[in-house]
Length: 420
Image 1 (spheres, one colour):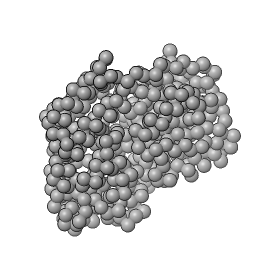
Image 2: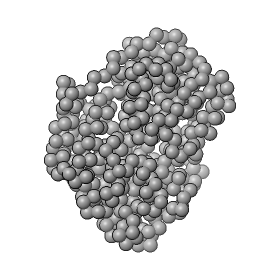
Image 3: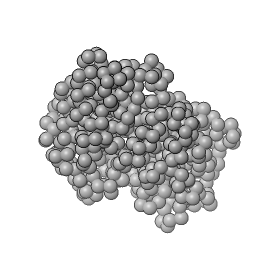
């Protein structure tokens, strides 16, 4: 498998824009510039961004920000951004990057480094800031964090005198027995072959006690036995019917709607699905807990978005000011209260008023702190494509689990090895 060539690191001319470099040598420098800017970010499915952006626009009439919504799916967002950046287009100023893209975008010279003193990293949850650092330089400002949660029908479990599952065996048993009894699907995650499936598989492997790659993505660490156990859990659910076949077409939004509309007993999703569910007929009938694992609570993949400045932006000074504003405490609180997204400021998770309004905050904090980051590699996209393609074959029951994990291990080795 041929490793995708990366774009040559672009050198930018420094123009005295304070805050756009962390002081290291040899890296690109910001070009400054003020005026209207754009924010390129994934589709706002909870309609919270508009009012938050309007706050900035009212206070900065000479530097208004325009929202440029990208597709909902992470893979499609990345493809659109990359096409724009490879063309050296200046239409994007601030980029909402999935946390796993930092290395790739930095390595390609598509974003500029930031001065660490300009970002309140000491206020953020442990581990979150690391997602914006590559080769000891800060390339973005953490904006929202994320960890997968298990959504469950608390009304049904209460009626059956059951507690939410902590293990895969309990999840399988409750989904198998109660799904047919209440005429709903048992369990679903994000099982369409895209980045969401990579995340779901990675979480299953972690929750079985394994891993896929080393943290620096230089070694394949996937134990075949633990990977088989993880994939057997998912593929077996499809085969046995407690994971509906329809779930193989789900991304985040489809799985959110399926649970919110009462078609699932359990669903794995990100915290953003919580808010809309409380404004639906399901309000008061559901709750969330940590993802289950093989022998106890499982481990989520660490998700989230970081805000970076395009290397081709002509208004990098305004872009930096906007990022500092949008990652400040006031907006971070609104990110939670208006968008149901996990903020990156640690103190907000211990705020009694917020916990009263969002009872799941302690569980969410625990899930984020126990989550594992995905491998830091400029070649992450290829790694993800290999994983999602292989796992999809097993979930559609067209490829045996044992052969799938063996071939996947070999393919991952070809992707990450030099010259592979």
